[in-house]
Image (cartoon, rainbow, N blue to C red):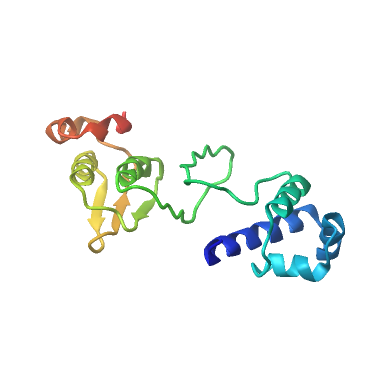
Length: 171
């Protein structure tokens, strides 16, 4: 297990135990181990057997360790609260194109960091600019987008839109 994985497992265990309202001693009793072993688990300093991971997942009714290639997560956000903050995405360079299109949902300013400067990104930026979105490269890889209150869809650069396959995401 890599150090990063051990730290992730440790954080997941701490969070799961806290959400359940348990002390380390209570978790130790449920696992049939010592409180100090649980403390080491929560610090990422305890080797975990597959059997122990399985017991932890049963106790907390959640996945502790994911095996295999990470998959994209799709989020649907509903509710009456205004959201703000940052999202870290580790994905393919083509995912930046989808994030450019998704930036139209935000009525404020969006900054996409470490955006690949591929041709498809440039084309979508042309289309967004033509409908009134202010697109500013802050450096070689960070793009700031400011959406206007009203998008001017009639002014869309149709030629730029035709040159990109990804324009379908804007529909």
